[in-house]
Length: 200
Image 1 (cartoon, rainbow, N blue to C red):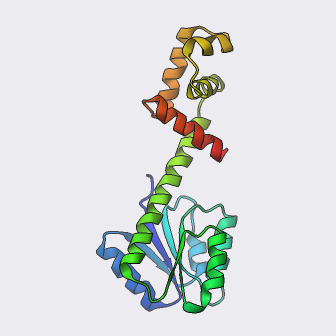
Image 2 (tube, helix red, strand yellow; image 1 turned 180 degrees about the horizontal axis):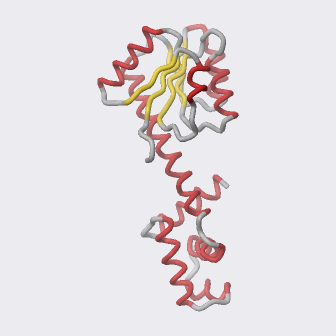
Image 3 (tube, rainbow, N blue to C red; image 1 turned 90 degrees about the vertical axis):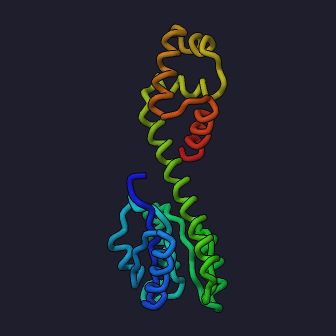
């Protein structure tokens, strides 16, 4: 990954921000905290990776408003909401908008750590899938044709006949495809094709 995964904390309560930073530091995770949603949005960059711990109730801009704004920016960072007892309808709305979880205050530290680790795994998977799409997009038109047919299970001689090229040329393109996509097996190639079709 190009960027180190970071746990971003957005909460107007300094005590909670400080406590979460200490907790995350104790388990070796990098964190950055913000007192408001607007402060985070001011520095938000599409290259950021990690997860977001977001308070649902904050003055000026609520956690839901921050989530909606990030959705508009096509942000893929997983969000974990922390909520008070009266915020269940808001939490349900947050989940509907794509949050991966919400944890009620006062929260159990181990539960939160477990959710954070799950969120970081999701983030890593999303980054990997989008990298796969970029690699497929880098293929030439002919390589893409070979990629599609190989991933569908066609034999080299069948691909050669379909595309009116020699088997040797198919082998060369196939080799380039495997190299560009950084895969070694047909199974990996098939998985990339499935991901590509889902993201296309």
